[in-house]
Length: 401
Image (cartoon, rainbow, N blue to C red; front, side, top):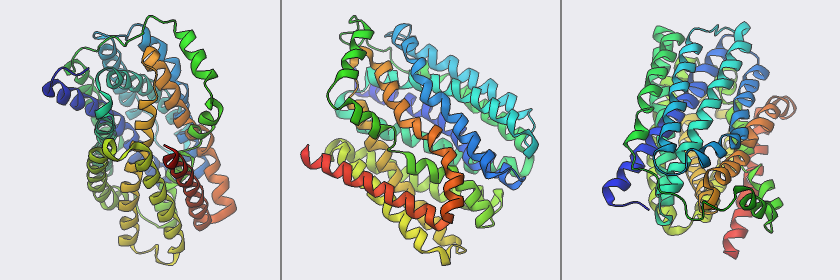
C-alpha cells in the first residue's frame, strides 16, 4: 500500500520514467530505425521481420518473472532488477550505434535489436512488479495512464521528434548514442521509488498458484482473447513506416518532423484524459470505446484513399488514432492488472502481458502478405473490421458486468 500522497506521486513518477525508457526504444524503432531502413531500400519483409523478432522477448518475458517473484519480492529487489536491465539496454543501444544500418546489415541490426528487447522486457517485468506492489486498486487506471503516457512521451517526443531530427542531421549513430545515454539516466529512477511491500500470500507455492490460474473456468477463452486483442494494431503498426515512406512518398525527416509532434501532443492529452476517467467509468468501457474508435477510424481512413496525398488528413487521423489507442491500451492493461493474483504477481502479470504481446510475433509477419493480397485500402478495412469485433466483445462483457 502507498504510505502517503507524496510516496504515491513519487512511485507514479518512477513508473512513468521506466516506461519513458521503453518508449524511447520503441519510438526509435518506429520513428527512426524502420523509416531509415525503408528509405535505404530494405524490403517490407525485412522490416516486419525485425518487428516480429523484437516481439519474441516480450512473449517470452514470463521467463524473467520467477526471478522478479523470487529475488525481486519486496524490499529493493525490483528496483535493482529494473536498474540493471536498463543499464544493459543502454549498452545495447551503444552497440547498435556501431552496427551497419544499411539494407545489407539488417541481419546484424535484427540480432542486436532482439538482445536489446530481451533486456527491456526484464526491466518491464520489474516495473510492473513495482506497480503491482505499490498501486492500490483505486489508482490502477491512473497508474496505467501515467505508465503508458510516459511510453508515448519517450516514443514521440524523445525518439520521434528529438532523436529523429538528430538522426537526420547528424547521423543514426549519434542518435543511438543519445538514446543510450537516456536509458542510462532512466536506470537511476528505480532507486527513487519507495521500497516494495511483500505481497499477501506470497508464501504459497507459485506452482500451486499457477495451476489454479490455468484450471480457472474460462481460462482458454481468456488466452484466446488476450493473444489476439492487439493483432490489428500490430499489423497497422508494422507497415506504418512502409506506408508513409513508400506509399505516401514522405522522407524519414518528414515522418519525424511533421507527424511525431502532433501525435505526441495528442497522446499526452489522451492518456491524461483516460487516466482521469478509467477508475471512475470502468476499464471495460474505456477499452470498448478505444476499440470502437480504432475500428471506425481505420475504415474511414481506407475510404478516404483518394485524399491520402493531403498531409493534414493523415495527421488528423494519426491524432484520432492516438486518442483511441490510449483508451484501448489503458483499458485492457487495467483489466489485466486488476485480475492479477498477488501471490505470484510478477509471474501472473507477465503471463498476461506475454499473451498481449503475442501478436507482435504472429501478426507482424502476416502484415506483408496481407498487404500483397488486399492492398493498402483493403488492409485498413480488414483491420478496422477486426477491431470492431473486439468492440462488440468488450461491449457484451460490459453489459454483463
